[in-house]
Figure 1: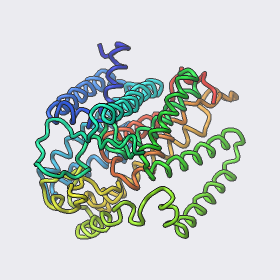
Figure 2 (figure 1 turned 90 degrees about the vertical axis):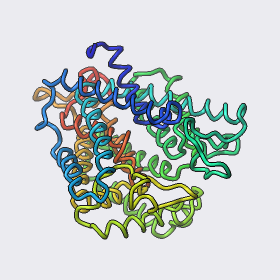
Figure 3 (figure 1 turned 60 degrees about the vertical axis):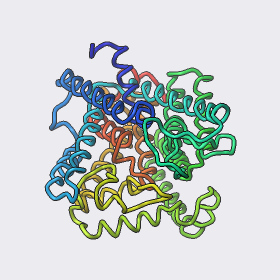
Length: 433
């Protein structure tokens, strides 16, 4: 069964969907139902790792990944909230496990196809859901299976706010406009790579890419606008290196672009924020970051203990940040969250994991595949995928902490493990960029 093509495709698609849109399960079949799905996926992942034990070993995994897991695990010894740390470690180990399994047992082509299906379902269902709410329900919708107090509820609690025909921001089936916007961004990447590689037809690709663009517009996420610009520069740099081979010139241009962008933000930051409809305090993030930094400075070296998502029932998270009547569950910045939970040690280890994965993804995207001496094999389209996914995650990590949980950590592990193998699919070798 583990080698059955249909089973493998369904498993990987459901896994991608669950990690990208976990709230769909939580809002429809409750946290208990979500737990059953998550455990089932983790069990299959373990079976796949055992089935493909000839393809991997612990000493072949990235050292920074193992160091990060070790540090997070031993932080239980000094954690301020050991019960919450135990839960966080369980979910982190499960996410890493399914990430390693996806990297070991599946090709980039299979990953691309599964992401394509999952993202189409998420984007298509989100627009249909918002249409149903606006045309039929005509009111805001709360998640199922949750008992809410009577009276006015914070907007952050609603699954849909019925804002489709008012220009958004819509939340879709994922129940969060920022997460829906990022899913749309991933859709642009995946659908674009699929089209460039000839995996889907022109009409199919353009329809879904236009839907992704429309979704980004309706979610009004400033972070995604920045990510689109950074991805555009990244693609241009890769294309220039592939076509001209002038790395020094390209790197110089990239440094210049970064310097110009930094200077523009420093001088025209307020105007740029107003242009994308954001307040000078970055929609409350500056206040959140100040509180997180203040808390992190109390335990700067090793942190308060790993927890991944903040648990709202445990100190100091129970009242650390409350926005619009809702307790926040992360720092809205992955790097501040790592510092808070694992201290400077965590920043060093996690930073090494991200940096090594980024370097290997860059090399994979800009260097020709290794073949026999004297041959010049063509670049492959699909070899750009891990770099684009990781760049998108890194931009998001400055405003969200998803890089540490669910799809963010999963994709990071997949890229880190798979690029270390330094290979793409044999089938991809025939696909020219």
